[in-house]
Image (tube, rainbow, N blue to C red; front, side, top):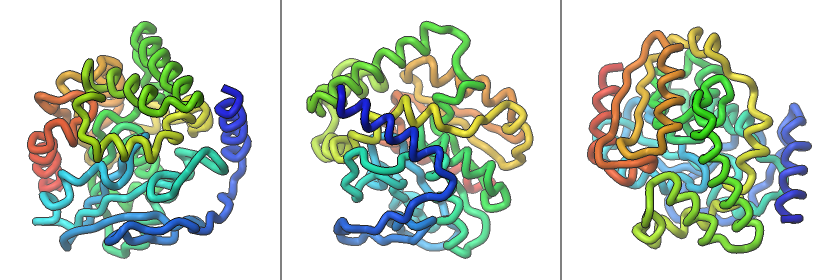
Length: 302
């Protein structure tokens, strides 16, 4: 636990800095992966197709590879781009230096600006949805539409009313962090996957997806401390956003996600809501056809 405690303390300290420290790239890039220099960091991404950009923003514990089932589908009509946020694979991050959702949201804005392609569609899942929401607040004129797939978790203004829901989530995160900090990577990831997607979720996860989670395990370990540094986001902030939004939930997801979406929906003026059948939190992978159809229909209308 000592290593995790030191990591979290360092994260808190760095998050208080207003100017991001440049992060020189010392790691190799997989074949076909590009980078864009954003705020002193080389953001990795992959892209397919042409036209109006649709930028996919992953959540905790994963990276651009999470969107494999979306890329070709959206590339048929759009310029599909999947990014890896700061500190995620292919960067081999083990807890050193800055880790901040505020910074990652600013990176998404800088990335969209560099495309020089006008307003973009943002599609964010889980923590990546929150980062996309923060990016939309920073630069609403850059965003044509925002799809929020069970994002917003961890924002106090949209926390579930039932304390038991928050307690269950916090217990799972705490147990996961303890296992990760002791070196039991697979054990920690199994706890998380069981919470998010139900019993047997880790066992049924393909090996390639398991390796992606292992590659990003430290981004999960800092969840609680990272959340404490987020800029406040209130219902009034949501009301000021005039960007069309689609809120997506998984049919079998933990109930705290639906509770958060309920609260967020009540604060939005241009909003649609859909449930992805036969899926839990990992809906882009568990039911890619249903997810792709819902997002494509929404994006095409804006």
